Image 1 (spheres, helix red, strand yellow):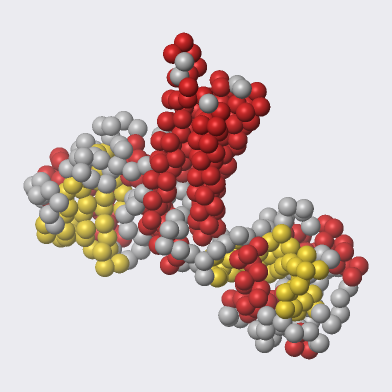
Image 2 (tube, one colour; image 1 turned 180 degrees about the horizontal axis):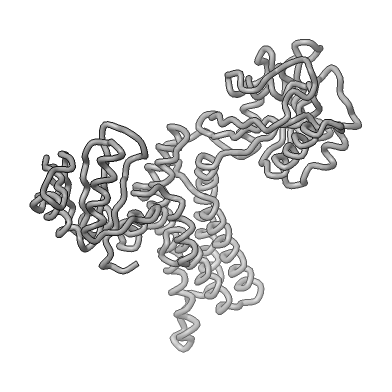
Length: 449
């Protein structure tokens, strides 16, 4: 993007509202402000002014805010026009700004400008989108921590320590005649181990943040009429799925999102798994398997009074190996069992009743544990899967470098792995990244943000 370009977008959601905001950023902001407002507003002061058309007639009246570079969100001159939120009025004002030399902003382009101009790093930019998309209070609070730089600070601290070790190692390689004694094995091993421990700690925190942001995909599977829809309704605390005594009532995938102490659960109720000549039900079974194959966790629902061992064995045999599974023995209110969690031949067994709610606290606790999710704390920050991947790769580089050094005394290989680890961590904050990655990140943002 050329630095001379000026971008504009409506920053408020589509539709009618009390207030509508037009945001402008770039080198033409000053001239646009003078044309539309008749003056350049005092920097960082809200002024009530008419928004003028090309013939000097008022399009609207509202608040104008001017933020001169570099002390603005994007790091460039920024103008915000806050008028009435009618779509026609906003469209007229947008057309007026476009006619004065601006172009429509791409999704996320204001945040992208802020990143490219050094106003925030990539983690903070992503936190803006995560804050907007937060599905729970806990997720919103964690996103604010990332936006404030808590996650970035942890990465920067590790990177600084890593650079210090690199300098140490590479000095000995480049100046062996100086007889620098830093390569005493215990010293190098200790420093790299400390870096690895710090990475493991941040990785654990990032996993919590990733779960908080992305949640867990749970699929309810099993034969018809075992109570899958009733389990969904009980978890959601509302009647989402039709429940009847007739088998095969559910024929499509029913989706709902709930939260357990901040952990988002994306729950899918699916058609009963059985052989059938009904074409519609066959499609339902096919869709059920499609969701099962994408799940993080499959809850196999069983009627505890009537277990079909053959069907259960076939179902488990067809499940992908990487997917967690648990067995829900439903309808204990009609049987002999009490609410409980046990370890069985096919995985964890949870005895519960969708009709009465017995055992559902046990189920919720089990789901959190199965994903390694702990209660949200004041130090929880939001993270993405790409962050987890980068942290894991950096940790692998440190471990590989340490093995090369301790087993083969290859300081050069250790130095290279330290360099790779540093670059990998820099991908998280955006100091070292590709244009393709930036495109993928910012195009998922809202227009106007």
